[in-house]
Amino acid sequence: MKKTIGEKIFDYVNILFMCIIIFLFIFPFWQLLMISFNDATDAMRGGIYFWPRMWTLKNYQMTLKHPLIGNAYLITILRTVIGTICSLLATGMFAYGLSKKHLVFRKVYLTLATITMFFSGGLIPTFLLIRGLGLTNNFWVYIIPSLISVWNMIIMKTFFQSLPASLEESAKIDGYNDLQIFFKIVLPTSTPIIAAIALFNGVGHWNAWFDAYIYINDANLLPLQTILMKIVAQNSAAQELMQHEQAVQGAVTPEAMKITTMMIAIGPIVLIYPFLQKYFMKGIMIGAIKE
Image 1 (tube, rainbow, N blue to C red):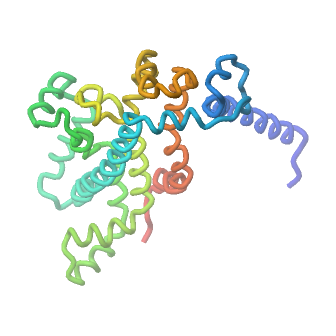
Image 2 (image 1 turned 90 degrees about the vertical axis):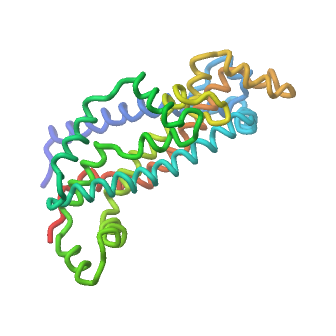
Image 3 (image 1 turned 90 degrees about the horizontal axis):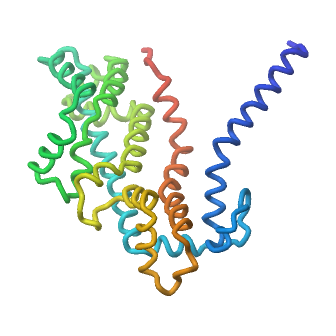
C-alpha cells in the first residue's frame, strides 16, 4: 500500500527524532572514550569531541598496571561470575519450589518473601547482622546477602508455572527426582528467562559499590566500582593512585585517570550486553508456553 505524503513526512520526522535521541545518548560516552585515548596533558586544552587529537594508550597502561586497579578488576570479575551463578541457582531453586501448588505452606513462604520486597531492617540492623555473621572484610559479603532476589524469584516462578506439566510427568515416569527434573529438564528449557535473570544479576554485581563501601575496610577486597566512586568523588584519590607511578607522573592527569577508570569499569558490560540482548528481550516478552 502506497504511503501518503503525510505518512512519509511522519516517518521522516520519527527517524530524525530517533537519530537525535540516539546521538544525545551516545555522544557523551563517545567523547569520554576519545578523551581516554588522548594524551592527558593535551586533553586539558579541551576541544576533543569525535576523535583523539594526540592518540595514546598511556592512560590505560598506567591505570591497568596499577596494583590497586588490577586487584579491584579481579575482585569485580570474581564477584560478578560467582555472584551471578550462585544467585541464579538459589533464586531458581526457590522459584521452582514455589511454582508447585502442592508445596506445603507455599502461600506462607511466598508472603514472607514478598514482605521483604517492601520492608527492610534498615542500614544499622543490616550492618549488625552482617558483622554478627562474620562477613565484614570478607569476600562472601558480596555473594551471600544477594543470593535470592524476590523480584527475580517472582519472574522465574511465573515462567516455571507456564512450562508444560507433561514435561515433568514424563521425567517422573523415567525415574527422575525433583533435583534431576530441575537441572536436566527445567533449566535447559528456560534459557530465555535464565539469560535475562543472569543479565540482571551480572549488571547488578558489576555496578555495585555501596556494600563494599560499608562492609569492607581491606583495600585488597574493594571492587572496581568502589574505587571508581572514590576517584570521582575525591580528586585526591586519583592523585594518590598516580603517586605510585613516579616515572610517568605528570604525563597522566587526575582527570584522565577518572575518565580512563570509568571506561574500564563500564567497558565489559557494554561489550557483553549485545550478546545477551536477544535472551533479555525473550525473557521479558515471553509470558507463556503453549503445549
